[in-house]
Image (cartoon, rainbow, N blue to C red; front, side):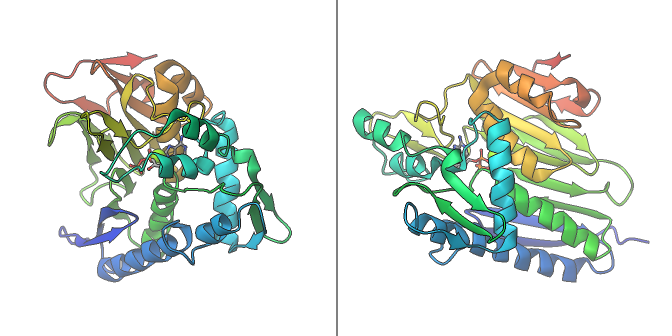
Length: 321
Ligand code: ADP
Ligand code: MG
């Protein structure tokens, strides 16, 4: 019988606090391996670590192609595919704009419009060139740069699930700061209950989701934002079409999927695209569902989540058929 007490580990990585739980005989060893895997992925994917594959690509923008490890190559290839499917609303070459807006920092001033327009020119995922035979990667123009902040934790979630399985774990959960992955059901066979944070109320939920074997990724304007001297808040998702922090009318997007990487990308893309265009895009992804909240705090739930989503008291929601 599986012990009812999970092994539990917390770790700080990728700019967030992560919490991993696993049940079963080898759960402790499994979570050690999970923590090592997360650290390994951060060391290749972070653009804040100078020796990472991503940093080397950025340092060589407009000059040289650099050889990256096959895993990085595959992540970049998938990023480009998804950028195209999302019509450029998700774009990993967003880094120069993220820097310009000083995202995540609190010493914040709105950039001059002229400078912003110049930087906006640098953002185009088509300028990331991948050569499959040599596994070499390059950015076409100087000052271009990639940022995997909108996909890296998703990919990491999928890798964590693989490690759980390698250790024979059949019931596990990992929270990577807004990205949750679940393996199987809880040991008693009931679904995991995953809370969806209310984007405006501290310690309050929009509702909860009952899931088995699913990844749940939320992009919300509450997670990371900066204040300017006038008290305006600017959050961390940028519209690659305008160069400004997104104003699509959405304040929170949760994606539920069997693939954490896809869920991560879609949470960002739908946040940029808004309810109508976003839901249309979602239709092209099978077994992928969404919970959206707009700025009037109206909640929209895709129809596949009927019976799985439990709203908190006072939350009104519409099922999108
Ligand atoms: P979080 O990192 O809080 O989970 P997201 O998954 O939505 O949130 O990713 C947002 C991060 O992705 C930003 O911090 C930035 O690094 C990057 N980013 C911002 N806008 C875009 C965009 N339009 N396309 C791709 N990445 C983006
Ligand atoms: Mg995302």
